[in-house]
Picture 1 (spheres, helix red, strand yellow):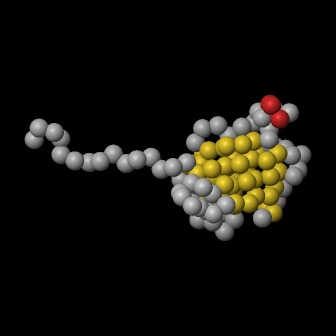
Picture 2 (cartoon, rainbow, N blue to C red):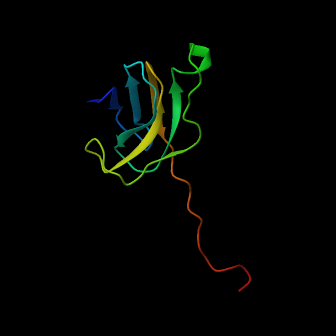
Amino acid sequence: MMHGKASYRICGKEKKPGDTLIIVINFQPQHHERYRIGMPKGGCYEEIFSSDRLEFGGVDRLNGGELRTEKVPWHDQLSSLEIKLPPLSMVILKKKPPRPRKKRGKPEGR
């Protein structure tokens, strides 16, 4: 899908949760510090590739840490998130698996 100055694509079929990749390509020479993209599923994502890494000749404008979706509808999706989108770059995001929930139970010895 083309939206403004960048293109993004939701790729892959899920054989198991978290297999879908989100690929965002910026075809313009402008940097976007807070580029919002619609996400197919809410939760936490991580950047698994950026062509702006130093080793690829970029300047290391990376999306470090967890990228958490917000309940802000965007690009025909119910949730979205904001990313750093360097000029003339490609960023690939992957959904992180959900954290295991702590079991609630009776304290031991009672």
